[in-house]
Each structure stands twice: as structure tokens, then as C-alpha cells.
Amino acid sequence: MASSQTALITGASGGIGIELARIHASKGRDLVVVARSEDKLQALKSELESQFGVSVWVIAEDLSEPDSAKKIYEQTQQLGLKISILINNAGFGGHGFFNERALEKEQSMMQVNMVSLTNLTHYYLQDMVKANYGRILNVSSTASFLPGPLQAVYYATKAYVTSFSQAVAEEVKHHNITVTALCPGAVDTGFVAAGDLEGLDVFKGAKSPKSVALVGYNDMEKGELVSFNEAGLKFMLTWFTPLLPRKLVLKLSRSMMEK
Image (tube, rainbow, N blue to C red; front, side):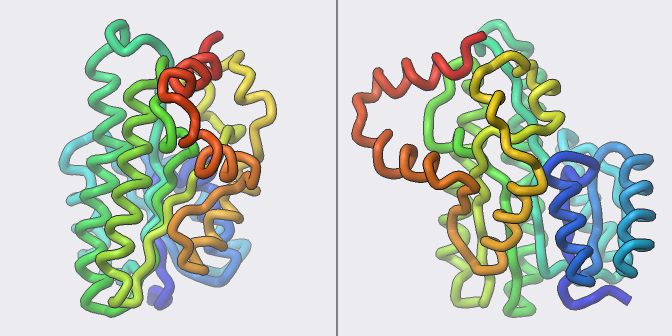
């Protein structure tokens, strides 16, 4: 029997996602873990169930597939699970000039980072409104506050996530539902290798996935609109950068992504 605080976490096989799963389970709360790798998810299920005595359900789906969100929702419905916490963590980036990158990769990125996130939010939000309770955490990025030359599509997808999260939060606040956008800076995860981002100075001071997950989870529980794990970045992006000339912002943003 699922607990009343059952969470669904995408991208749960590694990085921030696996740490969010561990934090949630450590509170004695059940969860559904979603990623492409069933083997990794089954290993996580065994770990969490044995360590914390919670129930964990595994759903192996590729969120770059257009119908993946619907399949995930239908599977939780068939299992009779009431999802009161939705954590949209799955996402990936990619380095290079937009015109030189494969369009298929950019389309997959948009599907995972924006479309599947939106679809999952839509499916589960309707149930949360009926229950008059819900918590949603969308993992965005500090990249959402800037245009990103050499990561044009990635930065744009995260701008969407941060904007979308805040707008929906305002719409559903009277239903005892909160939506939080977690906006970390550089994080030491497989994201770096997967996005061809090795060697960039910005990742030399990358924070641990566990520390980022803890900030995000706590801010989700408090109902924060936007969650930052680094106070310096928060100040720079929300108070300082908006005052700079746009062309200078683009130049600085590009310099961070140049190898």
C-alpha cells in the first residue's frame, strides 16, 4: 500500500535524481522511479527498500519518446498509485554551434526537457487539484536566466521550465499545490560527459548532486517558487546580470561555454 506522500521521480538512475530518491525514501515515503535503464532502477529499488523499508515501483521509459508521459501516467494508474509529489528531474544538454549540431539531438532535448515535463505535470496536476494537495519540483538550471551561445537549445529549454513552473504555481496555489523550479549551477554528474562539456572552467567548481538535491527537496517542501543552491549565483543572475547590456551578457555567457 502506497503512502500518502508517494513521489514520482524522473531521471532517477543517477545524478540529482538518484539523490532526490534517497532523500525522499529516507523520510519513510514511497516512490516511483523512472529512467531508461531498468537495471539501474532495479538496483535503486533494492537499495531503498532494504535501507528504508519503503515501497519502490520501477518504470523504465525513455522520455524522448512523445508518448512516454502518457505511458508513465497510465502505469501508475494501473498500479493504483496516488502521486502527490512529482519531481521532473530528467534532462540533458549538448555543446556546440546550433547549426552544426544534429537536429534530431536538439529535438530529443526539447522533448525531454520541456514537452515530457509539461505532459507529466498536466497529467498529475489534475489529480492533485482533485485531492487539493500536491508538490511539484521541476529541475531547471541557472542557465534559465541567460541566453546560452554554444548551448542555445539547452539554455532555452531551461528558461521554459523556470517560467512554466512559476506560472503554474500561481494558477494552483489555492489548491494547496506548490511548484518549485530548482536552479542549480554546475553539478558534478554524468550530465557533463553526456553533453560534451568536459574541460569547461565552469564545471571545475561543480557542486555534489547530493547537496543540490537536498536544497531542492527542502525548498519544494517549503513551497519556494525558485530554488538556488548557490547564493552568489542567485544574486548575480537575479540582481546584477539584468542590469548589464544585452550584448555583454551574451559575450560573457559564450565565454563560459568556450573550450
